[in-house]
Length: 374
Image 1 (cartoon, rainbow, N blue to C red):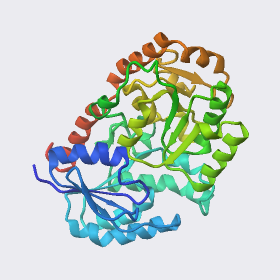
Image 2 (image 1 turned 180 degrees about the horizontal axis):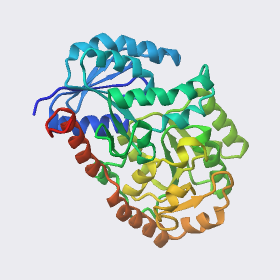
Image 3 (image 1 turned 45 degrees about the horizontal axis):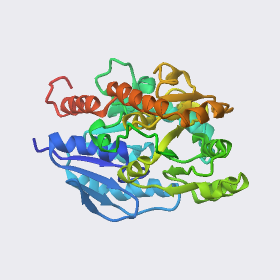
Image 4 (image 1 turned 30 degrees about the horizontal axis):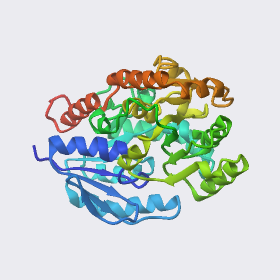
């Protein structure tokens, strides 16, 4: 089937796991041509048959809006069957495309309503928080919606709505299989993959490393990070005498990050109990499970229901981490490490992208009229 699909974003990286490695690559297998528009200043290229079009980078948050407007004319000229956008800032660009007769999908990666409460930089924040449900209502009436968690599906109408589909952000088992390590008994390092922030436990990871009192271990922190936070973390690590034991890489491709994970024995997903984090899965825990990496995760109810505590993970209070003796003992027990790795690999079989891909195909088929229930 040759159907042109276009995805566009001004906030996410071109190699974003959900956008590129999951949605774009999956969609190109069934529908043919898929293009991705970005605004990162890295130029145009083609990767795995997907053409990436760059409209140029920006330096301020307001630049996101301007980058969206720069995309508009080119997007319209694509004459795609479906346009999918991934950032709330692009609502008005999508609205214009809709007024020109285009079919639009909004892919809501997170519960944006809850996230707004934590965005202190947001101008007119109280007004935006008050008005945003109206924007969501408009999206539900004008666009098709995919959400990454069922917990906020009802932000866009009832669960019975045919215009809304939950496409969970589960890992691609086929992609991760080559990075799977079952016997990590000779591994020593610690690992974090994802956006780096205080709310995602940046300082707690360094605290944990320092409390282990093992100078042979290195903490690898991989993901987008501001220069200010990076400098602050280095200073904090130095104050705890572990300055030489942390490596902060910044953003890199998932494949590069997974190579580093092969030498690691423990991963982190210590999220603070705020807004969206309490009710939405951290995708990284499923990736850790798929590659056989034991991990530490916040003890939120959503994770307790997975029944992973002391099977493939340790659930902790993110505000008061008091499991150092338990983990220290674990890290010295080769059998326990291997048991955790095997359990994670087994448990994650239920949570995989391959099943979500089928739902994605069915949803796009409905939008294209191939299912006859629009």
